[in-house]
Image 1 (cartoon, rainbow, N blue to C red):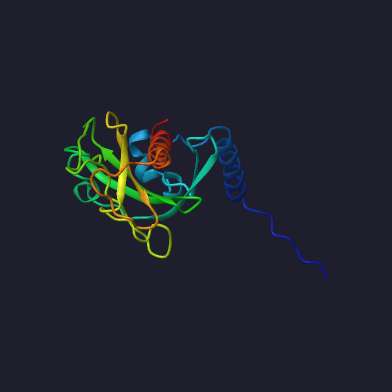
Image 2 (cartoon, helix red, strand yellow; image 1 turned 90 degrees about the vertical axis):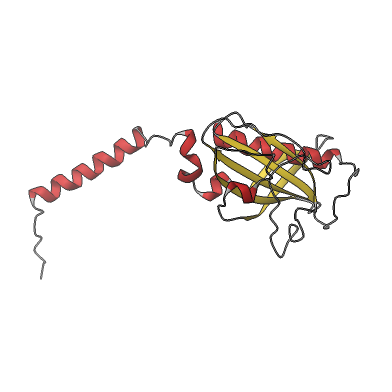
Length: 202
């Protein structure tokens, strides 16, 4: 015995057609991208801090920096050394990466700025003032702290975002005044700061 079909009501047909039209329009005219100044809270964490970031060693060999962990959002004074960022920093986002050989670890800090607030200086013992390192248990960044960073870079203090890095060794060795910095470690700090700043602002 056949089943009788109940025809849709006119308003149901209209709603269906409207939803199809809206779906097509969203493909033709996608939603506008958030303004640069809002990306830090509009973008998902995985876009702000990608799982991997490509780089190059001083010899030109390919290097991959792998995300070790993302820290909770924090106030700027607790995330950065005082000489690195000053008045006008609204909040700080931080994550730590390790190179693919698990030799180097680098914390990246993104300062969300109300406007240009350049900061520069030293930490008092020869190292650049920068972001405070964030350790993560169970991996290469487990022993990375304030005493373990050797070098750092600050990029973009003249815009809405300042990106700073602190780089050291995964074996937990502590910095001593006068210690030299390997070009590979310095390049890692620079490449990550530049790559993440470019992603937030371009």
